[in-house]
Length: 317
Image (cartoon, rainbow, N blue to C red):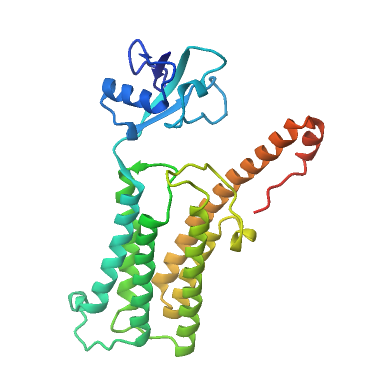
């Protein structure tokens, strides 16, 4: 089999193409490209070529599949589009770095006299809400790190190295920003009742969030296979992305208990980001739901009914 490897501009990346056996996989092709271009397989994004002007999204080649799966009929040739993704890191490394910062930085503002470097020279009295906020904060990020290594299953092995700097800047700066004000010597605590309601609600949401991650984990095999599947059960019967919902509410609980402007700014920004993620995922799952329905109906020769039904069809989140 001959594979022609081109860039998105149409220029040949490997002159003369690559010749592989008929039983070769996408992973074999990536290794062959690596030998020719010195680009690691993790940096390679291979897609099928699309017609000029087409608005269809290109099909991304799965490294575990055979190249024959992407050829039409008995064709012995295949054209793939190569994109260099740049330096990559594993998702576990990415998540570990971004979560480790807040976990380590927050206690610095609680335990050490950092405020004297910001001009405060008075005596500091630590309120109980500040202590419980420390426990809550550290529990959250320790949980996130443990989930990264023992719960989450990733569909993609790596992420661009640049995301490490971007994500760390986001988490580390917001962690320090919130820790500064919650632990400040002039901080005014909320009432004991409000603190209990906030942290109690937040802990309930953290436990719910963990259970949502367990449900999502079971949708994929240990290797990350499984594609986009519709999660079911628990809060997923109410909303498409229950994991994001519980994540937002657990920070709402934290802010009810601590009540700082910094905390609520973080909540608004995080809600905006996760809402966009949720809408994007909901659209993908609706497409999966529709295609599953369409293929099932098509299999039984009910195309006309399927076409009529598509005008009313919606995938419930």
